[in-house]
Each structure stands twice: as C-alpha cells, then as structure tokens.
Length: 249
Length: 248
Image 1 (cartoon, rainbow over the protein chains, first blue to last red):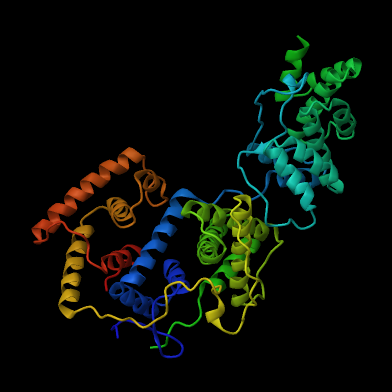
Image 2 (tube, each protein chain N blue to C red):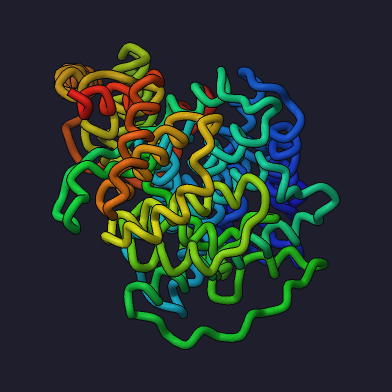
C-alpha cells in the first residue's frame, strides 16, 4: 500500500476524488488534510495527473474568462431604467447605456430600410437557454435573444406570442416594432411603435424606437406624420437628434 | 488521521452566494462573486465531464463554453435573488449543479445534432456523499494503489524537486508565475499574459520566460542536473509551493 494513500470511509485505500481536488484548488482544507492529500498525489501518478489537469483548467479560467463586471442581461438594464422612480432617465439610464452599443450596421434590407437602426443590445453574446427568469415570460426572453442575433422572423413570431405586463410590455413592443420594420412590414411597425413612442422613454431605447417609427412612417407613406416626428426628434439631444437634423438639411 | 469525508466547496459556495446577495458593491462583494464564479465553473465542468461519458463527447472548448454560460446564468439568478441556496443541503447543491450540467450538455448536443437518448435522471441520495458525483462520473477509480514507488526513486525525485525549488526561488515573483504557467501548465503566452497574476503583453511574457528558462537551466546545471523530463511528483511539489508557499 502506498505510504500516502488516502483512506476511504470504509477503511479502504483510494485515490483523490474530484471533490477533494476542488477543495484543494480553492484552499478550503485544513493544513493537515491538505498535506495528506498532496503527499498522496506526489506519490500517485494518476492523482498527480488529475490535479495537474484541474490546476490548468483553473488557471486558464482565471486567464481567459474573467468574471463579467455585470451579470445583468441587457434587457434587464432597460427594465430597471423603466421601473425606477420618476422615469429614471438620468444616471441609471446613462449607466445602463454605457455598457450597451448601438448596432448601426447597414445591410441589405427591404426598400426604405436604409435608415433603420437596431435597438440597443449588449456586446456580449449571451444566451438564456437554461434559466427561466422569474416573473418574465420565457417566450419573451427567447424573442429578445432572437432579435439580438438578428433572427427577425423568429424574433417577430416570439415577440408576438409573448405575454408581458408593465415595463416588459413596453420592451416587447419596442423590439417587435423594430423587428417588423427590418422586415419591411412598415404598417405593422407603425401600429406597434405608435403605442410606445412616449418621449419620456429612456434613451437610447426611446429615441431609437422613435427613429424607427419615423422610418416606418416614411416608408409606409405617412409623410406628414413622418415630417412631424422628424422635427420633434431634431429638437431632442443625442445621437438620434443629430441624425434627424442631418435628415432635415 | 480522520479521512476527508464531506466536500467543503458546497458550504463555501453557499456562503459566498449569501455574501453576494447581502453585501453592497465593493471589494468584499467582488471577492465573493469571484469565488462563486470559480466554484461554479469548476463544479459544472466536472459534472459535464462525467455526463459526457454517457450522453456524448464534447471538446474541452465546448465544455468550457457550457460551464461558463451556465455559471453566468446562475450568478445572475443569485444576484437577482431568484436563486439562493439558503437552507439547502450540500448534497442538494451538488445534485442541482449536476442537473444544470446535464441539461446544458443535452442542449448543446441537441443543437449539435449529436444527441443520444439520455438515461433517466437518478435520484440523489442526500445521505451518502458517495452519491454526489453522477453515476457516470466516477473520476479516478477508487481502487487500491497497485504499486509503490521504490525508495531510491523517491529519494531521487525528492532531491530533484528540492533542487528545482531552490532554483525557482531565485526567480522574481512574476518570472516564477510565468515559468510555472508555461512549463507546468503548458499555457500559451497569450493566456499567461492575460492572467490576473501576470498582466503583461504577450511579447513581454516571452522575454521573461526565455530569461527564466535560461536562469533555471544554469541553476540546475550548477547543482549537477541535466535537462530532462521532470519525474513524477514534481508538479505536486511545485504547485504546493506556488499555491501555498510551503514545502513538503
């Protein structure tokens, strides 16, 4: 028997377990216990190999996958902004927007879509396959994910089917309207986005949703409404206002 | 000597999760988040390895991806207060994470069109710690060791390791870490450069490593050792020194 072999609960000799290696890696063990396990591993090639593999995994994880600064999904940032008191469009919204990017990639789309922009999504390509979010319809989450990946048909289908209340209903309509517009379904987009075009919505979502509504109005032949909205957008501040002013020149 | 019976990580994970939920933003909370992140990744990865034996093989990269995603999902739920481990037994925690890994793997395999029919879920035995690992995750067989290292080889190995440790001690802290990550963990320069204990440009890592290797070679030669494969046990002894700063 190996001098340093560990002893099982039944008195038999055994090698290191995965649990023991994990406790070793995290330095959870009392010194005496740690010494006993390490002494065994030093004399046991199989255990040393397992320890080495786990150490490598551990250090590679620390090197290549640092813990994200925030673990909050992008649409939760929006939800938080919408639920804060007095339409929180100050610091909270700005802070949330700071971690977001507005994806402005032009691409082949339906006629009239040249001016469309994507509503903000995070840079992180995160899926939410497993964890159903408490109180939030999983279909809605899947629809938002589909929008994030620009799977527009799927996003439209899911966002239409999803049920939501309160601020999540606003979110659902904003992204549904955008997805419809990107598919050239401007009339439907106008109808949906008209319900969420409140100027008090936090930016950048609110202004981008109103810009999408403007594009949809123009493309669907509602010229006077489009002009009116464009002038209002030009009076605001921020990226969308600059875009609107440029359009008015 | 009392044998090590119950794993400690579930209890520590539970405590760290409680801290994440209770503490305000700050260093202590960040530290707790980091601990939760590392444990979740390690545990889910471990269960993925086990489940993959029966459900379907995956690459190490895919396993890391699944573990990271599931860990992030769980961390979110912890931060949002939609999942907590208060009053959960350690075996429950392990069983739950095993199931998280299992479903994560099934999702992946389904998407990859390589899914096999999974075995029915197995009831967890909260009494016996031997049931913590899924049935297909035996790890290293718990059989008696069949061989014993001859005493002369053990002495030789100990002498070699002692010389190696003396030489490593002459390196700077940063050079020692870089040498350890490359020589003993086989990590590429890019990963070493981004490691939180190093934080250098990749090119700089290569320079430090080259000098460290040269210094180690000269030091070992002065002690009468030729370059050769490290004998068994070397990794454990050097990792012990690296991780805990102590000698056998």
